[in-house]
Image (cartoon, rainbow, N blue to C red):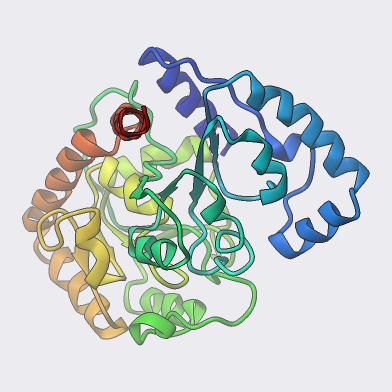
Length: 320
């Protein structure tokens, strides 16, 4: 992830934006809001030391973007009323109660990476809520185009087990425990190439992922709960992979379902779709091409930055 953040920073600078980065995790371990609130009330020494350094950095900027939504207490934020403050979170709805919900309404704007959760923020009383896509984690705009053979029939890069405690995707979609789901898919499609926690092949190095995806025809995507929000959503499209993804009813918030991505609502439907597109590689290719075209238009790092700063500019104009 460090490389991804650095590419994001360099992309903004190359576009002409003056951007400085303050890494909260370099100064304090990440904790959820209940723990943060206790440490704030006790004036925890390590937390106060971080806030002293962070406060000086915020004083020097016009816009403060809090990316990932952790570690900043609303009472600390209150001293920066003259700054434009932007809250970001990509952990909804799984961690909403202990990450975003207690703090988001204290910011001027909320750029949220799960488009299915925007209404939740509005219900919490947040103002100026908008969709801020994560973009691809493993795609680099400097990569040459790839036209080699697609010799990997289906791929999945990510944890087989999902969250550590038992949680059912069916809370939203009528699916099932992620491990059970993945085991069933692996049994149906033993040719699937899978890497990550819980898989027999183990993890794959970040630098090897671009080559793997550029050789893949189909890509499976499964969330822990409500989505779409994960990095696979953008990685697969960036590399022209035909993506078969859960959260079917919400996919159109990011890609055109049926044309740029294919959605499912059940394990049975997922299996049927994979079989269908494995047997029809040209149709899969066309969806992958359409997905990559959409990614290059809307979800590259420069596209995401330009859209964000256009939104911030409109807010500034209204406030002036």
